[in-house]
Image 1 (cartoon, rainbow, N blue to C red):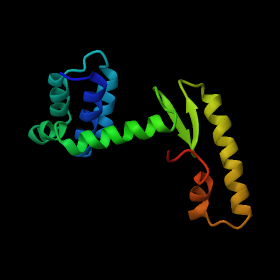
Image 2: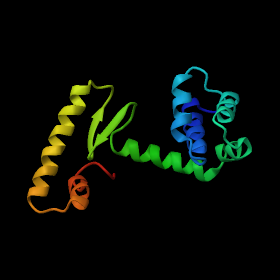
Image 3: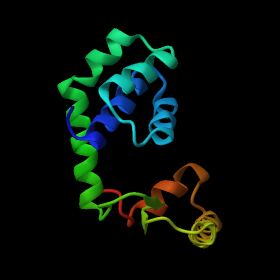
Length: 137
């Protein structure tokens, strides 16, 4: 088996191709010390996935490229470990208490309210908010 983290990403994405990304994600985190190709296949079966499609997708070069591109983007934005979070383009590193998220979200809500008060339409608030945030390298 190759790198466990890489394999876990591939299993999640392969499951996602059948609409079960988060279900596989949860299985992986519940069983983080048991990440083997055999277990990925077992969990795919438990989730009711088409096992042949799942196995094929696990080795798909396009899926591997998608994961590599996501990893490169995360690294370029400063997310070099897990967990890493972005709230409207603002980076929050590591396991943080609920209050840290609340503080950033409250600040972002105030900014959104200010944009609305300036006449920015609701459907453009997010676009305006993140234009100077970390959304691209």
